[in-house]
Image (cartoon, rainbow, N blue to C red):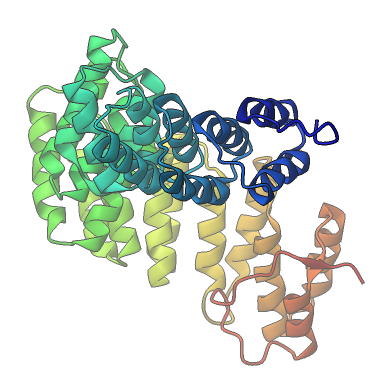
Length: 422
């Protein structure tokens, strides 16, 4: 065309840009050539360029083009902006997405589709961007847009971290409107949200409602209760009272709330309070489970109370419960903790294997450290057994053995996971 002195029209240039959309370098070269020839782009030019850049998530270049457009008296069209905003949200940039919404709607007096706020909400909730979640929920409510179940779960995960209880209620109502049957993953975040606000009674109300609905909460369901009581010991007595009230009111009985409180006492090193809770459990006629005894033995290990720990082990066996890995891990830690009398630790190691439970490398490393510190000839047996299990000797453990265990306090030095194969 140029050889024939025919000046390409903007339509010709746009056709070239469109035809080169699969080759970003060629398209960019074409656009640069337009600028060199002082060809003024039009709205379609920018739409073609922005469409490719949005697809490839080149957001910085998108912003550059959007900044150029006003100098030619142009504004992006609604479809292009909606694509850009959705792409930003899906890429984890909810703040930027909202900024573009506000900028476009204020400069053009056009309203973007309300549906884009579903993507913004998911992005904001996933990134715990509270202002973005509040804004998106407000727009969606005004637009009477319902959330799908997956998005509801994302928002529930968000509210569980920030304690936004009213929003949690809103989401549960939306799930009911969708006809979704309540499940554990719907209600557990609500429990956590209440506990963030230190409202243990409301949290336990949800928990006992789960039992009445025939759901199966696990120990993980009330882990937030453990953390709340651990961080605020003043909650312990009031929470025990709340649990007792629920048990007395005819609600389905459960060991889980008591176990959560036991675990909190363990984490705080309060063995006496843990034993008091065990007495309460027994007085209510609720049989302790393996997690109950594991927490109690863990508490004994923390306080190095071997006699009480052994008593709990005997009680566990008499109850007919099956010990698990954590049971033996804590029993071994208890008897390896202090002093030269650690014969019982070897007994529990053999007991562990007799139950078909394979000891982990960290347990063996603790035995190695103890044997090294007390020049125990059984060190060779422990090392041989580690080798049979396929466990390598970590660099830090090898170094510990070389220096004869000097300067280490058993149980406080973390074991390195990377083995030294030499």
